[in-house]
Each structure stands twice: as C-alpha cells, then as structure tokens.
Image 1 (spheres, rainbow, N blue to C red):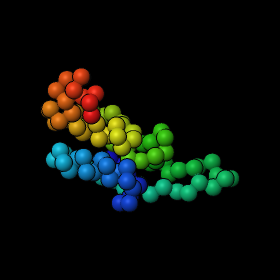
Image 2: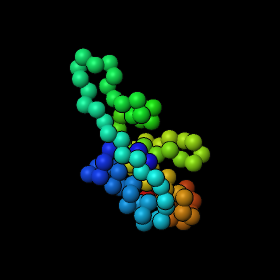
Image 3: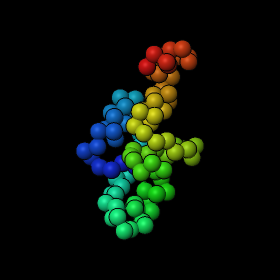
Image 4: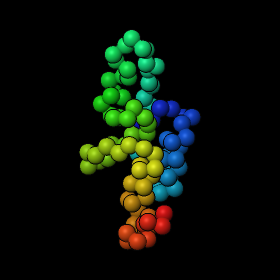
Length: 95
C-alpha cells in the first residue's frame, strides 16, 4: 500500500481494517512534492505511476490490480475474510 505518512486518516482506516482482519501488507510512504505553478512535473514519478487521482492510499493487489481510496481498500480487505463483509450480495449491502 502506498501512503503519504503516519498522520493520514485515510491510510489509518486501511491500517485498522487490515489489523482487525489480520491481513499482512507492505506500506510504502511516498513523499509528495508541492506543485509549482510554472512546473510541468507536478508530482514525483512514483506518484504519477501509482495514483491516477494523486491521492493516497493506493493498494496494489497480488492479482496486479490497483485500488484507490481508503473505503474501497477497506472493503477489498473485508472481502478477503469469508463472512466478514456478509455472506451474499444482500448482506454486504448492509455494511
């Protein structure tokens, strides 16, 4: 998971969800560059290649997919544990 540091609440949501579900992940803290008005390179190359929105967290799954936004990543983690996110589509809509 790519995050922008320890004080980020969105990354915190993902970390808490992973801890509750006992899911292991690797966190990479990406330092962002403050854009300059006259600069064409707004963000570091790593940020450009991993985050289309320029926001964090971003998760790369073992299947090779990239998931953006903390809530989407938390839901992905929850779906990795059978029954945690509901046993069917109807139950999962309740979360």
